[in-house]
Length: 564
Image (cartoon, rainbow, N blue to C red):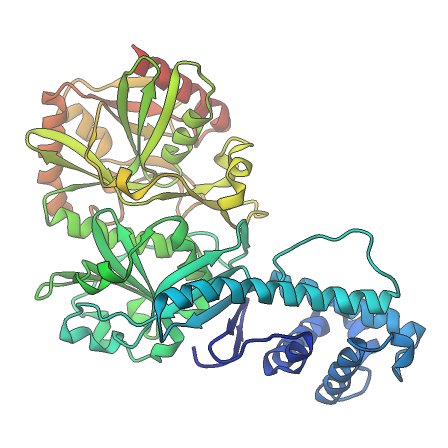
């Protein structure tokens, strides 16, 4: 980004590398403030025609904004009675405008960025100071204007993040990208970021549709967009490194990755070739939701076309995990669409539990229900993965690893207190929506998800059967008939409805490469039965009307079984 201020759709970006405001007057004089006012008045013309017409009247908007900004500047040093043209009625109307403009500003997704060109440690120190000062300055400006127009000081103050939702330091890394990827080298990497949580986001889309399909053409070959309008989040996905390049209009989605995937540092990015690359916001429609395997360089490339629907965070999360899963299958590892945790009882007994199922089956929600149980016998619960992980053989033993340090969970399937318990670190997406409101919660650390974890239980999350508790399978054949069929009752988290089936409940790699996944499944599950691991299904009932009640019953019976 080269401009001082960028405003498109619901995203506002302030570039401190071009302009840094030190006074309230500098904000009012900035081109960015003028652009914001123009956008606000267009919004006002659509939402409050009466106020717009009373304010602007028959005057040309540009001329009115000139006089408005001049009046606001005068208010910084004079009382409203001393300013020509601001009478008692005009003062009340202007106060209403200030209040509405401030509310409109705060509903935007607001970010500050700083391009690092010098000593990293220095930039790291000053970017937090710059962002903090900007927050204070915007809040001070609002209060100054508000109190001048109302003619008295406030009696109650609320200390909000009035400036930004987050701040980012960007810089260039000398990554080990092959020559065919040179056109990506100018895109800066996120080096440090700060989120003012809890963050409330309202993307225009709140469900994922369709599937990721393979293309023989590498999308990087058609990347022709301006590098300064893109940035990269270097994600550590399990033990893989994936560079996630995204257009600045999807900055909210890109920064939300910090609650889900560990961010790689400079040394990790410059001393290792990435295992995968994601291009989020491509220009060409042919790359709507695709992946490609660069056999020469052994890099998996995912791409999504610029479109309002990919504002739904599920698209970004799942294309990253698709690249991860495909890379892992080529190494003989089995991708698991599910959740896994290790529960430690106070008597020292530890049990590793993995639950497998497609979106909405109840795997993440069962984990949260188990965590919410109050038990004097449980010492702690360590999350290994919450949506996607892997099984592989270490020696002759099947072990599990994770991919994410966070969780992307439906709010209406959580225990009422869960979202509030971790609210201070959370990112909420469409929290007021009646369908698929979501929260991204940090829930574990990177060393835990990349450590080989013992597996004692492997359960299929059955959300469609009117039963309670668990059922253990007798052999691999019986287990395969359930796990591979991948049945679940869709709950509106994707474009599907009703009872559906997906190969191994995993449409993110295994379904596209079934011929590759089948022998890996047979090998891993045969080893599970040889090791006498409990392989069965758990009845979450999450697709039934009494879903929440059934979920808690399943969690209670699971914990009882683990203690035996």
